[in-house]
Image (cartoon, rainbow, N blue to C red; front, side, top):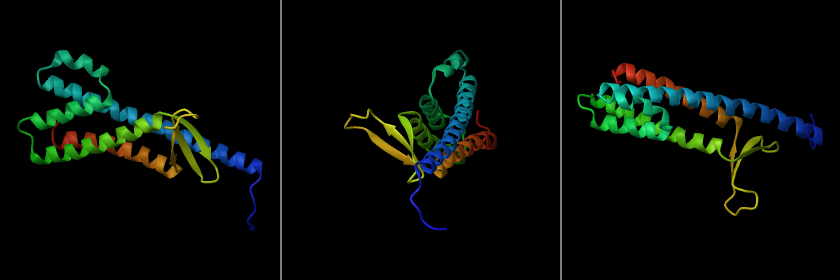
Length: 167
Protein backbone atom coordinates (compact mmCIF):
# COMPACT_ATOMS: atom_id res chain seq x y z
CA UNK A 1 0.00 0.00 0.00
CA UNK A 2 1.43 3.35 -0.96
CA UNK A 3 1.63 6.38 1.28
CA UNK A 4 -0.73 9.12 0.21
CA UNK A 5 -2.00 12.35 1.60
CA UNK A 6 -5.44 11.67 3.12
CA UNK A 7 -8.37 13.29 1.45
CA UNK A 8 -10.59 15.75 3.30
CA UNK A 9 -13.27 13.05 3.41
CA UNK A 10 -10.87 10.51 4.96
CA UNK A 11 -9.74 13.04 7.57
CA UNK A 12 -13.38 13.85 8.41
CA UNK A 13 -14.25 10.15 8.78
CA UNK A 14 -11.23 9.55 10.98
CA UNK A 15 -12.11 12.61 13.11
CA UNK A 16 -15.65 11.35 13.54
CA UNK A 17 -14.43 7.86 14.50
CA UNK A 18 -12.00 9.24 17.09
CA UNK A 19 -14.69 11.56 18.45
CA UNK A 20 -17.19 8.70 18.84
CA UNK A 21 -14.64 6.55 20.67
CA UNK A 22 -13.53 9.44 22.88
CA UNK A 23 -17.13 10.36 23.69
CA UNK A 24 -17.82 6.77 24.72
CA UNK A 25 -14.73 6.67 26.95
CA UNK A 26 -15.53 10.05 28.51
CA UNK A 27 -19.06 8.83 29.21
CA UNK A 28 -17.70 5.64 30.75
CA UNK A 29 -15.37 7.74 32.90
CA UNK A 30 -18.34 9.73 34.24
CA UNK A 31 -20.25 6.56 35.08
CA UNK A 32 -17.21 4.96 36.69
CA UNK A 33 -16.29 8.03 38.73
CA UNK A 34 -19.88 8.49 39.92
CA UNK A 35 -19.93 4.88 41.20
CA UNK A 36 -16.69 5.54 43.06
CA UNK A 37 -18.11 8.77 44.48
CA UNK A 38 -21.31 7.07 45.68
CA UNK A 39 -19.42 4.30 47.42
CA UNK A 40 -17.03 6.74 49.05
CA UNK A 41 -20.12 8.63 50.25
CA UNK A 42 -21.54 5.41 51.69
CA UNK A 43 -18.28 4.88 53.57
CA UNK A 44 -18.46 8.44 54.96
CA UNK A 45 -22.06 7.85 56.08
CA UNK A 46 -21.05 4.55 57.69
CA UNK A 47 -18.18 6.22 59.55
CA UNK A 48 -20.59 8.87 60.82
CA UNK A 49 -23.04 6.24 62.05
CA UNK A 50 -20.27 4.21 63.72
CA UNK A 51 -18.88 7.25 65.49
CA UNK A 52 -22.22 8.45 66.89
CA UNK A 53 -22.84 11.20 64.36
CA UNK A 54 -26.02 9.83 62.79
CA UNK A 55 -27.51 13.33 62.61
CA UNK A 56 -24.72 14.36 60.19
CA UNK A 57 -25.42 11.60 57.65
CA UNK A 58 -27.86 13.70 55.57
CA UNK A 59 -25.01 16.17 55.00
CA UNK A 60 -22.99 13.60 53.07
CA UNK A 61 -25.02 14.46 49.97
CA UNK A 62 -23.64 18.01 50.07
CA UNK A 63 -20.02 16.84 50.31
CA UNK A 64 -18.05 16.76 47.09
CA UNK A 65 -15.55 13.99 46.37
CA UNK A 66 -12.62 15.99 47.74
CA UNK A 67 -14.40 16.65 51.06
CA UNK A 68 -15.34 12.97 51.31
CA UNK A 69 -11.71 11.97 50.80
CA UNK A 70 -10.62 14.46 53.45
CA UNK A 71 -13.23 13.13 55.88
CA UNK A 72 -12.04 9.54 55.43
CA UNK A 73 -8.42 10.66 55.73
CA UNK A 74 -9.14 12.38 59.05
CA UNK A 75 -11.02 9.30 60.29
CA UNK A 76 -8.15 7.00 59.33
CA UNK A 77 -5.68 9.23 61.16
CA UNK A 78 -7.73 9.49 64.35
CA UNK A 79 -9.49 6.10 64.61
CA UNK A 80 -8.29 3.91 67.41
CA UNK A 81 -7.82 0.18 67.09
CA UNK A 82 -7.07 0.15 63.36
CA UNK A 83 -4.32 -2.14 62.18
CA UNK A 84 -1.24 -0.37 60.79
CA UNK A 85 -1.84 -2.24 57.53
CA UNK A 86 -5.30 -0.74 57.26
CA UNK A 87 -3.94 2.77 57.67
CA UNK A 88 -1.19 2.17 55.12
CA UNK A 89 -3.53 0.59 52.59
CA UNK A 90 -6.12 3.36 52.95
CA UNK A 91 -3.46 6.09 52.81
CA UNK A 92 -2.30 4.66 49.50
CA UNK A 93 -5.89 4.36 48.28
CA UNK A 94 -6.68 7.93 49.32
CA UNK A 95 -3.67 9.27 47.40
CA UNK A 96 -4.65 7.38 44.26
CA UNK A 97 -8.25 8.54 44.64
CA UNK A 98 -7.07 12.14 44.95
CA UNK A 99 -5.01 11.72 41.77
CA UNK A 100 -8.10 10.35 39.98
CA UNK A 101 -10.13 13.29 41.32
CA UNK A 102 -7.65 15.78 39.88
CA UNK A 103 -7.65 14.08 36.49
CA UNK A 104 -11.45 13.81 36.49
CA UNK A 105 -11.67 17.54 37.18
CA UNK A 106 -9.36 18.13 34.24
CA UNK A 107 -11.55 15.96 32.00
CA UNK A 108 -14.81 17.75 32.77
CA UNK A 109 -13.54 21.29 32.23
CA UNK A 110 -12.78 22.90 28.92
CA UNK A 111 -13.94 21.99 25.46
CA UNK A 112 -13.10 18.96 23.37
CA UNK A 113 -11.77 18.58 19.86
CA UNK A 114 -9.95 15.97 17.80
CA UNK A 115 -6.58 16.03 16.06
CA UNK A 116 -6.91 13.30 13.44
CA UNK A 117 -3.29 13.72 12.31
CA UNK A 118 -1.95 12.93 15.80
CA UNK A 119 -4.79 10.47 16.55
CA UNK A 120 -5.51 12.39 19.76
CA UNK A 121 -8.38 14.10 21.48
CA UNK A 122 -7.78 17.57 22.79
CA UNK A 123 -9.10 19.11 25.99
CA UNK A 124 -8.81 22.87 25.56
CA UNK A 125 -9.09 24.96 28.71
CA UNK A 126 -9.54 28.73 28.55
CA UNK A 127 -11.02 31.11 26.04
CA UNK A 128 -9.60 31.09 22.50
CA UNK A 129 -8.31 34.67 22.90
CA UNK A 130 -6.86 34.05 26.37
CA UNK A 131 -3.13 33.93 27.06
CA UNK A 132 -3.85 31.24 29.64
CA UNK A 133 -5.52 28.87 27.16
CA UNK A 134 -3.88 25.47 27.24
CA UNK A 135 -4.43 22.21 25.43
CA UNK A 136 -4.13 18.79 27.02
CA UNK A 137 -3.76 15.96 24.54
CA UNK A 138 -5.04 12.45 25.23
CA UNK A 139 -4.80 9.25 23.28
CA UNK A 140 -7.78 6.95 23.35
CA UNK A 141 -5.64 4.51 25.35
CA UNK A 142 -5.04 7.19 27.99
CA UNK A 143 -8.76 7.83 28.32
CA UNK A 144 -9.39 4.09 28.58
CA UNK A 145 -6.69 3.85 31.24
CA UNK A 146 -8.50 6.50 33.30
CA UNK A 147 -11.71 4.45 33.16
CA UNK A 148 -9.81 1.31 34.19
CA UNK A 149 -7.99 3.07 37.05
CA UNK A 150 -11.29 4.44 38.36
CA UNK A 151 -12.91 1.01 38.21
CA UNK A 152 -9.92 -0.54 39.99
CA UNK A 153 -10.10 2.09 42.75
CA UNK A 154 -13.78 1.34 43.19
CA UNK A 155 -13.06 -2.39 43.59
CA UNK A 156 -10.14 -1.75 45.92
CA UNK A 157 -12.26 0.41 48.22
CA UNK A 158 -14.77 -2.38 48.63
CA UNK A 159 -12.00 -4.96 49.21
CA UNK A 160 -10.17 -2.76 51.72
CA UNK A 161 -13.34 -2.12 53.69
CA UNK A 162 -14.05 -5.84 53.81
CA UNK A 163 -10.46 -6.94 54.50
CA UNK A 164 -9.88 -4.46 57.32
CA UNK A 165 -13.48 -4.33 58.54
CA UNK A 166 -13.67 -0.61 57.93
CA UNK A 167 -17.00 1.22 58.19
